Picture 1 (cartoon, rainbow, N blue to C red):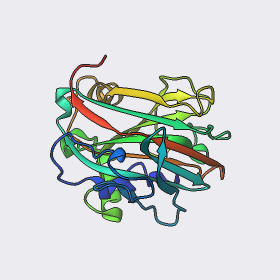
Picture 2: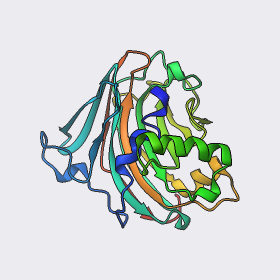
Picture 3: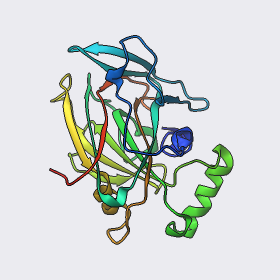
Length: 242
């Protein structure tokens, strides 16, 4: 993904003052309809967008995202007290992985599926050097650029559980939840304690700040490949991981 645009800058439109843990389900809309509000496309300047569609899958409406040398996501504003250990759950599937991706490099930063969780970190909790970079990003893209994010991915080769900084920025932690094509074509359920994942990524001594939004999509703009991902409904709740 170019210049971490989707990781931080393009996330700006989703960071709104929305209250509550409700995430509008894709299943509330009919196949062929536009994504239900407040889901909306995150547009990247000078980057070809994916193709989004609500489709029927097993009797339920789900989101299908196809990237053909493209990159992008749909974002949803959210306001969760992450200090109370919110759980985020969803299901996803892919047709195949991005064969030539490599999460360790900018030129290989492509994934068959991604889910972002954005956090609103107070300025005092960000190191000075990163504050400068964040200030520059907000000057370029607007004041709502999130200050930190987790990026859960379906990778091609790295082991499940791999957790590394984005090749573009030290404010986005990439966490591999699925890897390889062994489960391609199958729905896979995910459930994450995003507060615990935040502490693991940004410092165990830090209290997780509020969650300000989520996004779902995929990207193949670096490798030029084609990949399709499907996403079922997202659910947010306060509780303990199981």
